[in-house]
View (spheres, rainbow, N blue to C red):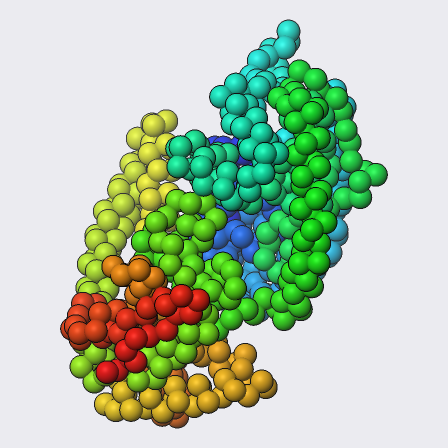
Length: 585
């Protein structure tokens, strides 16, 4: 009997789960007529068909097809699989390679001809739909109504017209938020910076847009693109639309904004939505222009630097970029000023009390020293590996228990289905049997589709892991000096370091830094140094971390989660920050 997987999708928030259920219902009827056995159902709800990258359902379908779990895929129509011409062709090739047929109720068995013709038609449909949607939104804006989205300071007006249809795009002033907008403009015109304004608003517990905290970027936005509170012309009664367009990145499936020429912007006077006076608006514009001219050279330099980073495929700017965490609020620590790391939430939003900073070069030097000399010891690795193996064994036990429960449930459901079919054959059919049989078949499909992973294999750990690790790290640190090897070895070093946590010490300017190593990165580094082993990768498990804490001068033992900690203080002495006691002493 042909093993069949069902797929269904709907793309609009205006639709509901009923659309998915209806698609599955007609697919089940078709499978019953063909005599196919349904072994699983896959779905993507409220997700566009223009890209498959961000659709978990289609990704699972593709993965299981490659694993040989079914022989045929059945969907309502080809556009349910994807409307993107390139994606349809790619998926079709993958299904063909896996030996899986793609069948739809609308087109039958899909061939290269369907892929070419229907793929083109679906792509043209999307393009035409986008044009019609844009035209409709433009007409709404020209009537003084919103083209979409709700900015800070306004409410959505909900009412119906004489025919009972919902009127879209109408806004009204939110009086409480309008006072906050006036406060922001007034304080900025009086010389206060966006960062200081954000600090004060957060301190006063004033909710920001969408209930989030205020940040300086929320207020100042982007001058050229006219984003942010300070550049919103709606506050002076001018509705601006079509400033930017969105296109999907084919690599990620995510939307990326692109600015439109100012000649394509649509402006409409809406005096009923004015919040600010012209005098206050012009005062803010004058100060913003002065600041822009004053720092134009700096902004141009940053723009060039960002362009170089894009050309470098978004490699981390510094060795530990994106891996440094605040020990107080858990937020990111970034370069704040003068090549120093600090808590972003403190310096940008004023919502964290961690005001300490540490020079980037000092942190990198001490972290490299820590991973080479102190992050791995025989006892630490032994306990970390023991904890990891216990996780594997626990996962295996849970999987076996779940598999047994699924087997019993499946037996019960199949007996119930057989009983109903037997009753129908004996002439005892009742209309309620059809509904019950459909429910049971859906339960059976879900149980059959549920994938119970195989037991995770316990990895073999080299008995001399600590020494091999030190050799590997010594090579990596030396190779960092070679520009040709720097990018490659930097990735290896980052895989060893899980994160670096920065916390304030009790003394003035004192900083504690905790280095948390990733066990799997350490073991893979050992595997490379030892010349064997392969990748030690177990999906769904989080290996324990080894820890190195640079803090008090006395040593401390902490074997929690298979790790350990040792310490030395960082002391901020004026303009520099360095260890008063070298690590390891």
